[in-house]
Amino acid sequence: MNRNHILAIILSCAEITFSQIWSFSSVADPRSGFVDFTKALTEIRDLTVNPEPKMKPSDFILVNGDYDPADKNFQIFQEVFKNSSNKIKFLPVMGNHDLDSYSYIKEKIISDDKAFVFYDSSSLSYYMDWKNSRFIIVDQYNGTGFNSGCINQAGINWVEQKISSSNAEHIFISFHEPAFPKYRHINNSFDECKMERDEFWNMILKYKDRVRAVLVGHTHFYYDIKIKNANGDVTDPNKFPIEEGGIYQIDAGAAGNSEDGKVTIVEFLINGKDVIARVVQSEKGAGIFKELKTIRIK
Image (cartoon, one colour):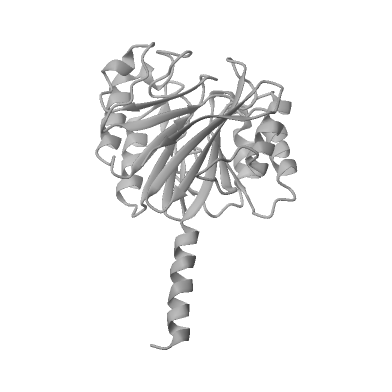
């Protein structure tokens, strides 16, 4: 084997490794907090808070519901990233306040994005394969949802099929109303339908070797928990368990319409088999972000 062949192999391996180091961001509930949402998106773009291990510029932003008015907030997104070198995507998750924007979301935000594969034409449930990961987005109100915030049997079956049929190293699931809400909307989210909630959680636990996190919003408070027992300590509103062998649920808080006075961004670094989440926050209206915590998910 000559020197050129060896160099080609080295460069090829380096390219493969580099392509597997990438980032995405998760936010929720910007609603009418336009100034704070602009500052949150600007922080995602500029990465002013970026200690080791350093995040890459986000390939996309997962917006975990309640980005009404959708037209205004999507316009803000486009404006912030209009001169960005990477073509960043806006991944919408249906929230309870987004129902009136359903047509706009389908026709303007995601109509031309061939990366999204939909459950059917009646809902905003879809999945996206990206690099070494699969993202499964569940609509809790149309098609795969019922009772204004729960996931129905068809939705549970669809999510499992999309997990089991994927060869992705990492799987992330997103919907708006938490399976285990804290602070607000307790017993008025997915937890209102305990039978379906427990079935869903026990189902994804079968795939805990690849399901990294469930990403949600709705409460307007940031928190992270890791759940193995759906009827254990997590049912206590004052407990935030991190259970060995469980799966993370990460509530992104709010990126504009916060209840706790914080503007929150959750940034993810995917480095081959490793997954890290970094939480950065700013005081509402300030736009000066600081690291809250870094979570090594895998």
